Length: 215
Image 1 (cartoon, rainbow, N blue to C red):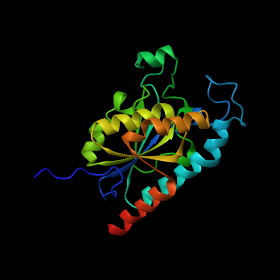
Image 2: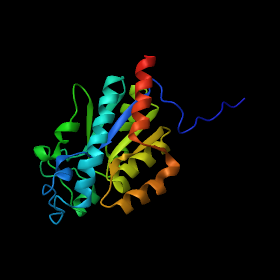
Image 3: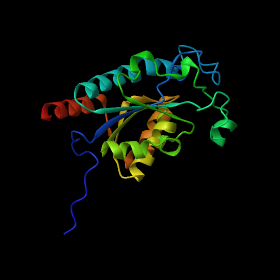
């Protein structure tokens, strides 16, 4: 008899769950740090949204994950070389280049890795395309991948879809993501909702706490 298929929103399992934070870097999150968008001042929607909601909710997710044995993985846009010669063609054309020596390429301090948390530099929108994250997750025994980050309609979108295609049960934490506008954020969630379970920070942190009690 064929075993029943899992549900996207089935309970997470201890030792099989990881939180992935996508591109929560100073260069994108500090007003004036992104040379591609000098017109975005501190009052721009994106900076207000990330400061008031996205970052605080990710802090809650991180605290709950760390307290309850959930693996934490960070990915950032960062070239392997100072001149960016290893970048994808798309990043060369855009252009996007964050040299490994640039401090603003690191995560904002409140979301920085602690201990031996894994941080994977990528040179494409999709973390599964330009890092060995699939190999790493499988080595860790991860089946449930919880994704949060920026931009909802770009790098988060690709992480969700690519993870689903590779057999992970994906959760997107909607209120711990952000895009350049509310319309783009909402449109992305609607577009990739079929690839994941969309939940909020309160629900996901509560599930992390259940894992800690079961351990």
